[in-house]
Length: 130
Picture 1 (cartoon, rainbow, N blue to C red):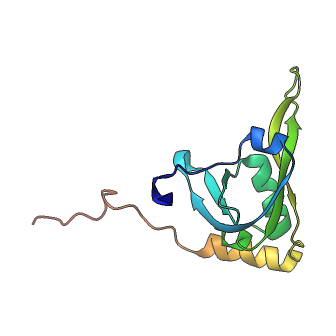
Picture 2: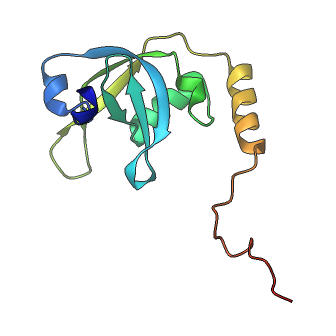
């Protein structure tokens, strides 16, 4: 019956009850070309810029597989836009130890060297009818 249940994303209301600790089990591209992490507790969370900044700083850049198996804590933080009052926002603490700078650099280099797959129908894969 769980196939019929809606996907549950971590909300600000969830975090208002207290921090949430979980392990990242998968990172995929969600709607609007934003990465989404599936957590060990069954929840999902979008990885916004500030969350991604923390993850990349701790575990290196890459395709997201370097975040899998890492324990994180989501909590209710604040965003302070210029000239506006602070607003609640999702924030993250990395719990798993950070990787060394050498490992992070190797991860970033590997991610950049892998060729990006071309979408089908890009206009360059048609047969020429001569």
